[in-house]
Length: 98
Image 1 (cartoon, rainbow, N blue to C red):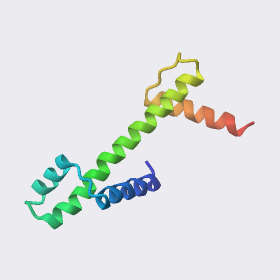
Image 2 (image 1 turned 180 degrees about the horizontal axis):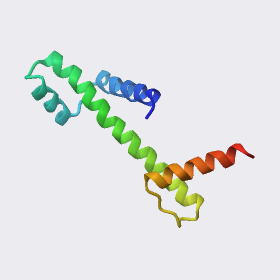
Image 3 (image 1 turned 180 degrees about the vertical axis):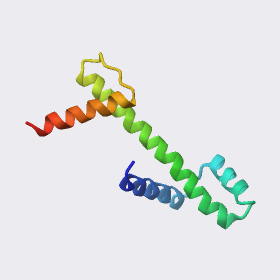
């Protein structure tokens, strides 16, 4: 994913922290990795939560794209990641030629 989406995800993590939300499992991992140093754990938590959220965002985008592809093709096409890339490239190229 691009730096822009990474910035977006980091901003979402910041908003969660400002709202007092925290993933307890990731916090425990951060505390463990930082030998119970709260300041270091906070930095590690942000990195872990950003990673987790980035994966969630990527998964949701892929799900939406696959759904749109299936709808566009009448539901008869199931694509893996390589097939999805080829499909999107073809659609983008053909859209640009209109």
